[in-house]
Amino acid sequence: MDIQARALEEGMSYQTLIASVLHKFVSGRLVESALGLTSHSSGTRQKRRAP
Image: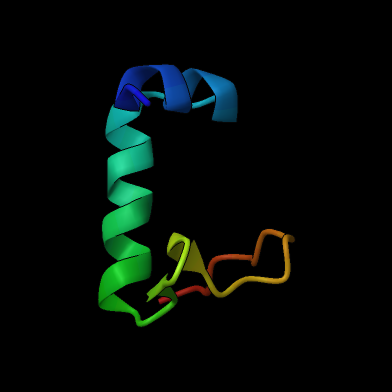
């Protein structure tokens, strides 16, 4: 699937989608499974912590 098309499905720009995937990867929440890459999330958005 095209990255830009997937971003539109998710309701965000493709730059935001790529940044999200990279963030999940470096934080260890994106892992490879037999079906492809998956995210370790409960399906809910976590609030961003204040610095």
